Every structure is written in structure tokens, then in C-alpha cells.
Image (cartoon, rainbow, N blue to C red; front, top):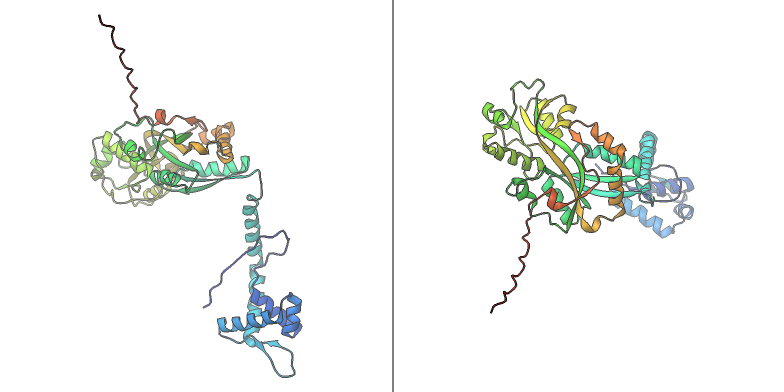
Length: 372
């Protein structure tokens, strides 16, 4: 079976939405004009080019396309005629879908030609408020967020490697210098190089089946009940948070039953619990509520956006900060279960939000005493 590849062009012409193929155009011209020379003139091509293309396609497809008989006009072979028929059938059946695809492509490319539009690439730890922000920013500010969900550690690494302009990660407020949070993020963030932009505050906790049948109120309960626990992958911000919460409860990952089961997002964890594949897992309240689960809050955490200091004045970053600071977005965020609009759009001190760096003041030299 021959494979079909689709291509498109950018043009100012308002032509019909058709998926064109150069071979079909050659066959149509030969069929209409009755000779290769006349077809070439109609297409504005040389006889040699048209002849060569027809022979090349015959070799490619393994079938004769044109039939020449002495004293007769050139005509399509049976195979060539069937190709023409297949083209007409496909165009007739798919024209509405082709038109919709063309219109969607035009809308997407319109952003590139609009000087008032901005596109911002964001690698971020999974968060259900970010898709809401993407829709709001596109509608209200002509700001288009290209969001790639990944783990918090990978998101900041992508920022440092130049693969994005902005990264999203989350942590407990004022994490301890010896916490897993500090060990995960300290090597990736540097005061003076990175700047934090506030996004919001959210609640993480145990997602459980409706009615909380196992009566889980803490990670200690999860360990004691040997509840089937679905985890997040290493490198995700929620996995880092879990390790800190376990340490605070004098527990380890080995105390959780089913710790080897991992899901890539809060939504996937919630779905696993809703489907009965697990009893509980750590996640955000919005993911639990949206899937009809009960929720046991365990921690409030800050969700941060981070960029390089040099990027703060970029138009896209400025536009995003303006959207985040606007009351319309903050009111919308406050309606999301477990979210609070805290420090939205503010540039925050890295040392204050993640107080791991300690700088000793240089001691002033003691002046020499005047002796006798």
C-alpha cells in the first residue's frame, strides 16, 4: 500500500481548500488537452519537464500512466484514469474536513503575522490551573502559552538549557535548608540569575474514593492501612513534596504499599483511584473534585514561575505578568477548588521564597589600637 503525505503552502491567495498533488495536475492537463506539449503550455512548464515527471512517476508507481498510439492523441492509461477517479472521490468526500483544517492552520499562523500577539514557551510541572490561564490569556491579552507539562526538575533544567523562556514548579512555603525540596532545586536555581514570578497557592493532599472508605487522614494512615498508593515519577514536584511529607511523618517511601505504581499527572492519579486501581495518591484538590473523589488536605504550597533575569523585560513576560495581576484572572483562579491567587504576577525574591542561601557578612577589620 502506498503511503500518503500531506503538505501545505503559505500564500496571500484566497484559493480553494484543496489538497493538491503535482502528478494529478499533470494527468488532468494531459487528459484535457490530449497531448503532452499542450499540457505543458497550459501549466506553464516545458515539454521536457512534463515528460520527465510522467516517466519518473511511472517508475515510482510501477504502472503506465499515459498511452500513445500512432496518429492518436495521448490519453490516460487505465491506471492513470483510476488515479484521477480516486482523486475526485477523495476531494468530494473530504472537502469539508480539508476546509476546516485549512481554516485552523490559518488561525494558528495568524498569530505569527500579528505584531500585537505574543507566544511564550512554558515547561511546567503539571497543574490544572495552567490550561485555564492559557485560554484566558489567549482571549484577553492575545498571549499564547505553549505549555509542555513535565516534572518540576525537568522544567527548570529546560529553562537553564534554553529550551523555554519560563518554567513552572512548586514547593512548600519556606522549605527547610535540609529538605528534599532544597536538595532538588538548589543546584538548578541561582540568585541573581533567576527570577521568580508568583502564580498562586494550591492545596495538595490525599485523593480518595467517595466517602473515604479506608478512613485515611494522613500518610501514617496510608502506611498503617497498607492502602494501595499511586505515586508520581521521580523528578516531579509532587514526588519531591511527598518525600518531604514522609520525612516529616518519620516515614519512608518503602512504607507505602504500591509505591512502584506511578502516573504522569494529577489527573492520571485521580483516574487510577476512580477506576479502583489504587486506594489513594497525593495530588491537587481540583483533580480530585473534578473526578468525583474525596480529598484530604495535607499541605499548602506555592506554585512558582521562574525565568532568567534577562528575560523579565521581554514583551511576552510583561504581557503574562499583566494578565496574572489583573482582577479578572485572580477571580477566575479563586473559583478553582484548592487554589488561591497569591502574589500573582509579582516578581519575588528567590532568597526569601526559597531561603537556602546564606551569606555571611564580611567582618570589618578591627582598627589597630593606639599603644603607648
